[in-house]
Structures are given as C-alpha cells and as structure tokens.
Image (cartoon, rainbow, N blue to C red; front, top):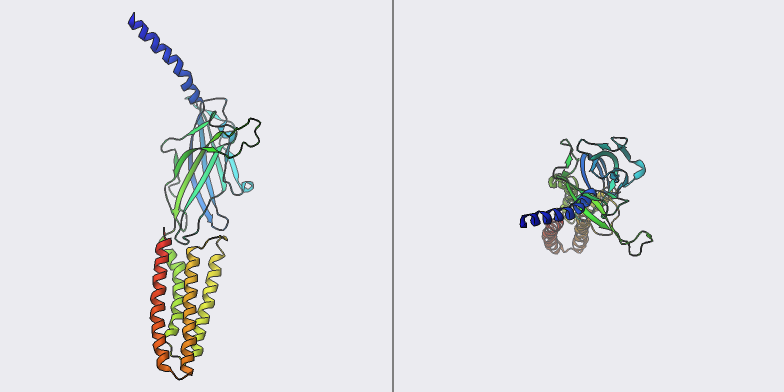
Length: 323
C-alpha cells in the first residue's frame, strides 16, 4: 500500500511540474550568428560595416522571432540589406522551426577616443525582440553558436574572438502602454568584438612625425645667437608644420568634448616650440646687449631643462593614456 502511495505522489508531482517546464520551453528561442565581414570602422561617424548571418530555432508555432526581432544599433537602416534564407520558417526533422537572416549594413558603436591613437574599442551588434517581453520569449545561446569567417581581418586593428551575452533589457518608459506601470523586460542579444591598434605602427605613423618636427625646432638651441634669422625661421617653420599635422590628424576624427592623447601630445609639443622661441628672443637680446656669456649660459640651461622636461611629460602621458 505504501508503494502505491509513493507512485501516486510521484505521478502527481510530475503532472504538476511538467506543464510549467513545457511553458518555459515554449518561449525559448535559440539564436546563433556567423560574422562574415567587418569593415570600415569610421571614427568620425562612430560606425562600422558588418555582413552577418543570424539564425533562430524555436518550438512554439505561435512565435515568429525571425519576424519580430530588431537590430537596435543600426547606423543607416535605409542603406542596409536584409535577406531571409527561407520564404517562411523551415521546420526541421526535430520539430523545431528554423530561419536564417543575412544582414548587410552599418552599426553604430560608442567609441571613446581618450587614448587615441592607442585606444581599445568594442564593436557591438545588438538585437532584441520588439514585440514580446521576456514573459513570452527568451533568447538562449549555446557554446559555439557564434563564429566568424576564418579569413576575417580588419585593416589597422587586431580583432578579438567574438563574445555573446543575453540580457533582459528594461526601458525607463512604458511606451505609452495603457497598462499602468507596464515596464517589462525584452530579451536582448549583444555580440561584441574587442579591437586594438598595434602600438608600433601607429607610433611611427602618428607620433614620430611630431617628435621629428620638435627635434628640428630644438636644433635652434645649438645655433649661435648671431644667426637669429635662421633660428627664428626654424622655429616658425616647425610651428606651422605642427599645426598642419594636427589639422590633418583631426580631419579624420569626430569633435569630442574631452582631450585626446594625440591632442595632449600636440599641446605639449607646442609648448616646447614656444620655449625654444622664448630662448631665441632672450639670447638674442643678451647678444645685442653684448652679454654673450650670459646668453650662452642661459641657452644651455633652457636647452637642458626643456628637453628633459618635454621627454618626461611625453613618456608619462603615453604611459598614462595607453590602455
């Protein structure tokens, strides 16, 4: 009799728990992605171009995740191309429904340029269901369901392996819902890549020209005060060259409200050139006043302190900003 009681209780618990589990499974949608290309990271518009395949698998025939999903950070939707592999969702032998979407277009990303040109960036592809909340639809992902083209390369950057995470996105608004306090969560997928610039190439391309111009300006320290025209010409030419380099560099960057590393390096270099010009003016004044010994002594001190200070500030700045 006791054995029958145990069997009855087991059957009762199974019948109670099973509907809940089935209800939970019915709202699950497995997602995956294959990133075919990432191109054209545009710092000025803070966007990048992607060719990506996204697929959905689900069991509930009342769901249509391939129709109700939406990319959340598209940059220019009007220029994008969206193509479904199947005219309608395809039913697999397992009973699951299946659809693959190919998206070709641009995505926006929050890009911080404080450490430019030695900055690290995160490129994100974000989508979520725009019709159903997490009460009715939940995205899931399996290990290995996000892959990239083995030949994928992003010129000028080192590209990390992709990372994917599932979030419950809750908005600070009810979108005008008639249900009071209706602020449900929506299932969201975030696919991200870390990109970094190689240190040495950008050091040679963007930083070394600044140092070269500064060194040319610094040569005025070693020209005798009598050659005042040559000294002034070297300093002024160096200053104009620095200005031209800065304008060229900034033409490819957006206007930001903070100071970037490249801006700091230019400002420090401008300060050094200013010190050289001050030295030219003061030593020329001493020379015209027939105080050549004072001019030489002053020039040696300024030369030593300014060069050492400049190099220390540059090294400290790069070390501080470099991520």
